[in-house]
Amino acid sequence: MHRKYISILVMLLGVVTTACVAQTWDATKDFGPSNPNGVWSYGYGATGTSFTLDPIYNPDCAQYTKGFVCWTAKILVNTPLVGFNTTGNWFHEYQELFPPDALLVHPGPYDGQDTIVQWAAPVAGYYKVSAFFEILATDPTGIVALVFHNGTPLFRAELLGPPAQFPDKPGGREDFTFKSFLNAGDVISFGVNKDGNWYEDSIGFNATITRAATPCALCSQQ
Image 1 (spheres, helix red, strand yellow):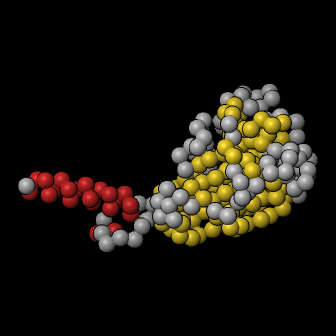
Image 2: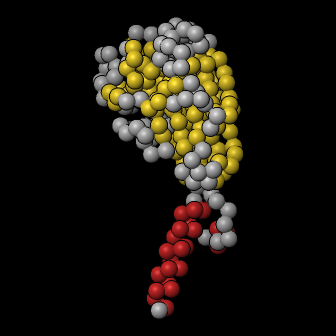
Image 3: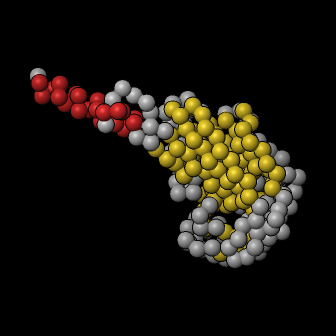
């Protein structure tokens, strides 16, 4: 009997310890060939209003350079898309930079085709969300960066310039930070809207989300 109680206590302490440990998600590092991909989903729609999962995973998404993978709806020239440069190095094609440390996102050509990366809170808790959007086109036509909590807008910024520069210098950048208690299943949506013109809308994006260590009765004793 004593061994049984000890086993239960050890199991409970393990659960408490796990709950007390902070956890971090990174949109770039977590990118993968599943959709949904754990807490992440890749798709398109009207940010904060509608969302459709990208149906196609393309392991050879760049025109000339191997190593750029993407999720896409392939409505026109592989867009809308969310992609990742797996080479570990900067490269460029046409008027676009491909960074090794951020996702490349591009909206679709039609209204209602924002490219959207969604993250869903796995458990209730206090979270910090940090994200950035940066221009990757050398001749940008402008985009609108959007962040929503479920259907509530948190952030909106228009990126028009300055342009990116070859070989490895992104252009204009906007940063976003948000701290709040989130319920399990709450969704943070990061969207890129074409801002009227679909051309040269490639944007570098990343989001880092951290769940704070949960306050609990035994945390002070760990």
